[in-house]
Image 1 (cartoon, helix red, strand yellow):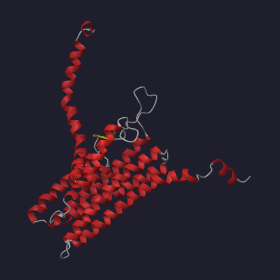
Image 2 (image 1 turned 90 degrees about the vertical axis):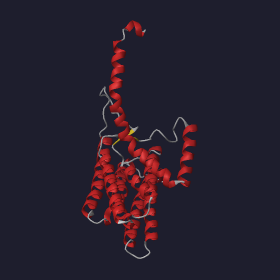
Image 3 (image 1 turned 180 degrees about the vertical axis):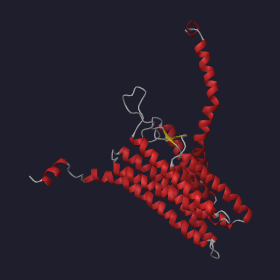
Length: 301
């Protein structure tokens, strides 16, 4: 028996439906990359139309298409991981491909969109605009690198016997959520900022610069963000989850601009809000704990 035959018997190739199951999550990831590439191309075409006569309507539509593509990529990014876990088709290859896709779609694409749609053509802010977009991109890449390291080196429990990962929350704002926040803003107001008057252009450009910088800082922060991994087909409350999901889909279908902007704003802000609430309520919790400890055991019984 040759070495090839021995290796073939030891590691037989996957065939049929089992092999197809491993391809499905990667197909969603490739769709994610396609959406990011589509967003970049549409933003570049729209940026070229800004200096052409009667190019504003077409440029506005192209920027809106780019924002919608980021939203679709966000949905695909959430599905590939869930499908991989449901079908037990997770692999190191899929993890690496997903990270590369996130850098392209949720890092480069939104940074380019913010530059072309927003502050890139503002007089006097060219260098600042370039730096802020790059700052957003590099913070997103650092956020993904930290996530991969934490996933492969899980924290240990207090007993020190078994590793324990906190699957209910993320550390730092996830990069897909940061990109979707910008996409929701552009989808809400797709008209490019360079078409505004000079005073309005500088005002909104600075607002966008501050917003992009804040998103970048939140990505590398230690704020906790809910992962919603406990929501899904295995949820023990389907009669609550399914009606709410139906209302959400209906709201996005009929009022996508308002619903998406509100949802993304609430999610991005809930990390710092929860942290602030915990800091403010800590003295009150200490008072309650101290008062409970001072009560004699006979009174507690």
